[in-house]
Image (cartoon, rainbow over all chains, first blue to last red):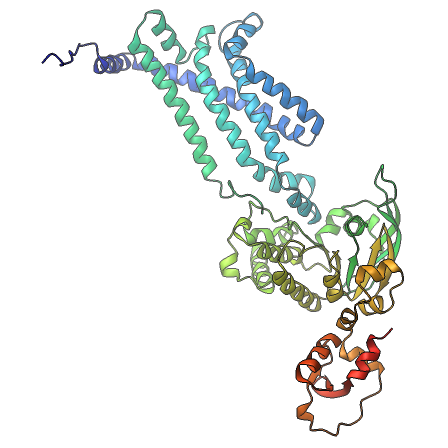
Amino acid sequence: MRWRVRRTPTANGGLLQQALSYALLHRAELLAQTRTHVELAFGALALAIVLAYPLGVWISGRRRISAAALGTASALRVVPSLGILALLLPVLGVGTPPSLVALVILALPPILVNVDAGYRGVEPAALDAAAAMGMTRWQLFLYVQTPLALPVFLTGVRGAVVEVVASATLAAFIGGGGLGETIITGMQVDNQAQLLVGGLLVALLALSAELLIVLIERSIPWRRMRHS
Amino acid sequence: MASIRFAGVRVAYPGAARPAVDGVTLAIPSACLAVLLGPSGCGKTTLLRTINRLQPIDGGRIEIDGRDTAGLDPIALRRRIGYVIQAVGLFPHLTVAQNVAVVPNLLGWDSQRVSERVDTLLAQVSLDPQSFRDRYPSQLSGGQQQRVGIARALAAEPSILLMDEPFGSVDAIVRASLQKETLALQRRTGATILFVTHDVEEALSLADMLVVMRDGHFEQTGTPAEILTHPATPFVAELVDADDALRRLSVITLGELTASAARGTPLPEEPGTIPALDAGVSLRAALAVMLETGAPRVRVMHDGREAAVLDLDTLRNAVRR
């Protein structure tokens, strides 16, 4: 009898229950925050792709510029997201624009690196054959280089998407909104249930986004095919 | 049908000590299989790539059917010249059928015609269309990939086919069968083929015209038999191993020898005991038959009729220099 563990009403089951009731009670608010979160993350991702893709294609054909650009990109990766926000605050103020810019800076490096690697990695013999068959430069780019670079590009997008969805939480610090609001106020009022809801939703978003990219990657029939 | 003419063609890479191709002149008649033979770095690949203008030239001119290629649109020019390389260069993201169909599609053929053409070509290179059409290159062996490479190069019925060490990375057995099929394809299509290799055996067995290259210039041009029996320089003699009597025998056919020699005397023996060989058989193969059967002579058959009789003495004279 003396070994029996006493259960208090505030044990694990209790926390989950509290989290669930918090989520139900604040579902409208959470839904709006999730929407903002997704908009921020995917907006930043889309912007990063629009910027990094052409740049990556351009540098892939230029060895020296490519080395410099990739160096800069990996240096950017080292800067903590919160540091970027702090740096942007005096320039762009608070709200959505600085949050977007910070997330774009975060998403750029993995996409740039992989676009460069993807185009650079196209088998030279395939390019030689394509040129010899009378493809124009544009046809070469469209029908040979781009499809072959696509799987590598998507791997970069996968890396960026997880990073961006997770980091979009920080946007709440500078008034960018998103699920970070729930987490930050949860921290302020020391409400563990609220923290758990915010954290779980962010994790769920990041995982679903990654899963989506993985599914797209899997649908490419030549994804893992290496030349002989 | 297309003839190719090089006139003083020169290619100089910037910073190189000597030109990669140093003012070469050569006329290759239509439907000829010309082989460029030489060691690595002799300029044979560079010269090959000047024809479809993948390699710009720094001097001289190249004519196809008498027209200077410098005045032609390079894109249009390349679409009517087939190109096969050692690394094959199949597109890994396209199926076998899509790979073969690239040039016809670039030329805007309708899909029905493209599809029929693909099946015909795959059959021609000994790949069953039903089982190979929809495979990806990574699912094929090296030899199968090169067969697809050849089918792809032939897709738009080019009158010129450029082959750059096409069988360099397949094993000896596959190489032999691909060489045989190349010859058969050439006879069937009447294409002019320029074939680059550093493999002497391959050069001797394929060439109508053999061009020996060294340091950017031509050492000697001629039929394999001419080059083996009368090498112009010590370099050529050593490269083709002209001292090897069996090799010399391998490039001369019975027909070639007996056409120049007097017709054999009627035979006293029963014709049945003397081996009969086709005029297209090499002297080396004839010698092998004589050694195997113990027969002192063979009958040379031309179109099924006896054209001559060949004995060991005639063979010995043929190989003596």
